[in-house]
Structure formats: C-alpha cells, structure tokens
Length: 107
Length: 119
Image (cartoon, rainbow over all chains, first blue to last red; front, side):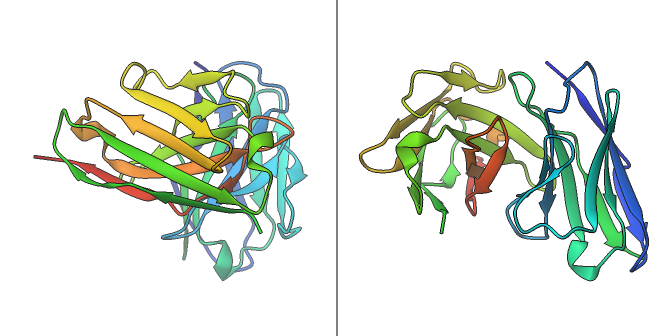
C-alpha cells in the first residue's frame, strides 16, 4: 500500500498568517492527490484535487502544489473559519490511503 | 443538492453483526461509485470499502476484508455495509462518500453514523 506521511500533526497559527501542510508519498503518485478539510464536529469536505485544482466553492487563499512525491497545502491568510483538521489522500492506487491528518488551531 | 444520509449505527457486542445504510439524493445514484470511510474517535480517516456504479468492482481495506460486505440497490438509491464479526477496533463514525466522476476522490460525504463495539 502507498503510505502518506503528513506533517505536522498539529499546528498553531495566528489570523492572517501563512500556513503550510505537507504530505510525502511513499512512491510516485503523479498528481493523484487530494486535500480535505474537516471542521470540528463536521464531515470532511474536498478542498483540492489533482494536487493543485480547487474544488468548487473553495476560497482562493487555499492552494496546492507538488514537488516530486512531496505535496503541500498552503493557506495564504489564515481565517477563523479555516480552523479544523486537514487530510491528504492519494487516488493513484487502491487502497486510496489518507495521511494521518494535521490539526490546525488558532494561536 | 447532493445528500447522503447514513443510518443503522449503534452499540453492538463484539462478534455480533450490524448493517449500515446510506440513502442518496440530489444526483443520479446509479452513475457513481460509492465508498464507506470510517473515523475512530479522535483519530484520522480510514477508507473501508468501495463499490462501482454497477457493482462490478468491489474493494475492501485489509482490516475488514472477509468480515464486511458492501452492496447497493440502485433502484432504492441506497448503499449498504454489512458488518459481521465486529471487533472493538471497528468502533468509529462511518461515513458514506461519493466517488467523484473524475477519479478516486471523495467529493460528497454524509454526516456519518456511529458504530460502537463494546460488551
């Protein structure tokens, strides 16, 4: 199975700060990578797919990038509504594994 | 509006069975693959099972293979997960999630249904 190593496990940041979360794939997955946001007590929501494409309705302060087998999610100016957990997921091969998640809190 | 509504969860003893349901609305259910994904309390997401639109392709996580069975009834717009030989480690919030038409991403999720396995 493909392993997705996500970091950091938790992150404390201030409003308007730039936030970056990374995922390292254990093998080449191309651009088959998604990011999900899970707000407290809610279901996950698709944020980014194909490593860099924003899902419908996602604010432009979110962006995704890829460098080899490392993938990053960037929030350019943290807002209070961005607080929650974030997960990466590879869609290259079954099983479609998730990263362990990053819990984002306000400083 | 796409809606996925799970039901059937509850408290069950180890070794017993439980069947989850997920009723879909707001889209043509028969055109989409569907998944079950679970989240243990305070933990991350774990994909559990997938079924293609016409039930031709079915996949399971190794942790549930041989114990869980995913199925669907396209006439009833309903996805199922039959869970047998339940273990304490199966305790989780179970989500049904639609596979995007484009690839193996999960573009819509239900609100989840809680399964607690305990004596």
